Structure formats: structure tokens, C-alpha cells
Image: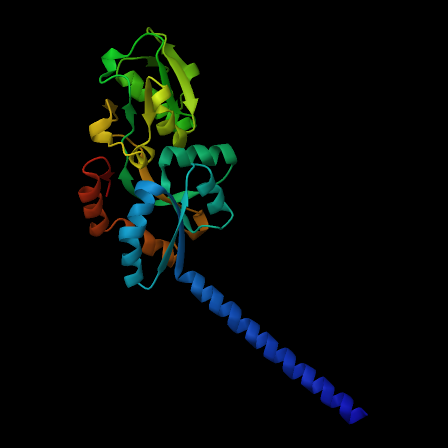
Length: 272
């Protein structure tokens, strides 16, 4: 009996060691795989297009697998980054990231600035800003930084005057001689809303998705010295990881710059 009991204990010990070893190998393999997989959240155009068509093959040459998750809004890519569903995201500019951090008490950061998407004003009803009638309805993005950009563009065109502050809403309009009605709408919904508006100020990524060319179809556009360059955003603790360094290098490569120039014909401008 004692011998049988001893043998049973030995077998249990051997099996336990084997299971632990298998578990260690499995965990090790998973960790190594994750180190070579980069998951990036992006809006469809131009971000996901740039990542899939140019950045992905460049990273493959360096031994990394790029997975691109496409989002159609401006909030979820940051929340996904915070909960570690993403390694990075590529869709926003620095002022938007700063506003997100301030509002949510987070500390997301960025590595590189990649390109500028000039915000443009579009209309199905007029061909020049001067033709805008009294009490015209203008759609603008409803997030703080992009609404500020839109209102600044309208002010630059002489339609309104606004307060001298960083973040603007329609309540910060100080002069409105044409009694323009500002309608705050989700940025992604503005192209579809365009037929119902007299004018809409649209982010270039959503304009491009709607087959609108910012440099050809807009009747007013931001100047090239706009501070709103799009970035690679990451969690602060991951900023100096090898795979984020590889991503940042690939997305600011000569190949990406050429692709932006050849594909978007000035509608999007590389900032590196």
C-alpha cells in the first residue's frame, strides 16, 4: 500500500511539473507573438488606407505583423487604447488628444506627427462663401477641438467673429451679422447631413470617404500652417517599446510620404 501511495504521489508530481512547463511554454509563446504583433486603431480614410497599403508591408520586412482595426467615430479608438485593446491609434491631432486627456483625466501621449488634413467647408447649395444667405444653417463637428477649428475657419472667411480663446463653441460667437445658425453634429455624420444644410465644415477623412476632395470641392479650407497634424497616439508606458518605435519609423518613412503625395494630391499633406 505504501509503495502504491508513493508511486501515485510521484506520478502526480511529474504530471504537475509537465503541466507547469507546458503552461510556461504557452505563455512564453503568446508573449513573444504579442511583441511582434502591432494592433492599431484608425478611421478608414486616409488612416487605415495608409496603414494597410504602405505601413503593413514595411513592418513585415522588419518582422512585425500589423493589424488595423477600423473605427467610425472619434471616441472609441482612445478608450480601446486605454483598455489595451490597441497598441496605438492613428486618427486624431494633438489638440484633440489634449482635450481627451483633460476631460477624462488620462495621460495618453504620441510619438510622431504624420499628416495634416485641412478642414474644409462644403455646400450643395452655393459655390462661394459670399452667396451664403441670412439665417443660413451651417453644420460643424460637435467635439470641442474640431468645432473650434470649424468656427475659426468661418471667422477667417468673415462670416462670424469669435472670442479669443483656445476652445470654442457656438456660444463663443461674438458677432453674427447674417444670423447664421450653427448646428453641432457628429463629425462622421456631416457628409450625410450636407444636403440638408447650407454649408458644412467637414474633417478631411470623412470628406474623402464621401468622395469629396478637400482641395477641389471645398469652398473654403484651412491654411497649411494649421497645428492639427494627425499623430500616432499611445499609452505613455508603451511609448518607448520596440514595436512602437518600429511603427513610428514606418509611418514616417519616405514610402509613406510618397504615397500621401501621389494618392491624395494635396488634399492631405505629410508633416515629416
